[in-house]
Image (cartoon, rainbow, N blue to C red; front, side, top):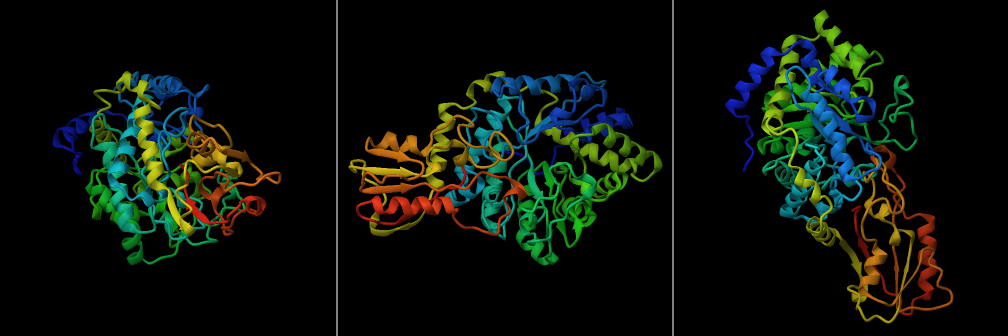
Length: 519
């Protein structure tokens, strides 16, 4: 089934009827998105909340698919107890599989899928991710990122498919359709609007009024959430075209970027959000903020709320103090600083997306989907993606592929036997982790399955022996967002030392280099 770029007339008619019944409190509740650790389920009922999310690491304890399903169900049940019984949509950053869930299938990050250049594979990955999300009652995926990274020092480069806008469009649309053009469908969030990949190094601001949260000053943050100092023609040619393509393909939600364009925060930019995206591009879906992002607009929170909503924002990822957001927006409407027409427009867009998604008819997905989370069938697609995403950079003297009957192979490097380093950021928790963070096969285990002649030492200490082949696995520590901003793109001293340690112990030194992006 194909999603239509336009919402059907019957949906619009039913939404108008529902909107006519709603009080101001019910409308503003629909525009509010707290994170799950900050709101008890009963307040979803009390404040008519339209959405709840799990941030990176917003997991139940213990972290299992069944517990995820139960956690999300409790919030949905609370939403259905409201006067009008409007269901919520639960969101999660399932950016490379349903990656917060222990045991779910993790796929290569977008940089690896860009290297694979296989739109059909990307659509299959999105389909599987959607099914595993729905198996845990999650309807809304904060993906795909259609960022077009222009500076490889950016910590989110691995979340982009390519620096080539055309490839980003091809794969981003494939992912969107893999989530949405199927039954049961999941909701995609095309992000981050706009030019998050085009910001300038050294333009990141700090905000003393929100210190103590994750946006606090950190000397590693140098480009993420920075300022795109580019003219409008460049903005349109490189960074806006993926959104036009996504809208044409049926996008119902777009997430706004933390970053700025020419000194104006995107969350408060009426020209970008309303004049270009909604009016010129004809976007009929709803806009959601990023995590606590409106707070960066101004020291005064009232100004943040009024500016962002009037700019065109429809739902706010608060994510903590939802009562403050609700009371502030209510006061702004009562004072006339935000019109009731703007509120109605925002809620209309949210309700249309919910109707399109089908959550009014089926707020709880088929419970049988839970059984398929992490299934062998799904993992087979992940293995295909890993194989296709590996990029061979150099292969002197036909070193690769290795013969299975090679008499002796040394394997070194901490990354050879570490699921966390293989997975990278956005894996179980926001920044990723070290060690056996979830289910999977390490590179070392794969080597041993292929050959019995493997000897492993993480530090590369093979001084008592020699081998025909030496494999050194180098891996950067996982990170996410601005925590990965880095202007020193070199191997670590530890990795260089291991390479120097292993090289003399290999009989015939030949050089091959391959790259496997976070997966």
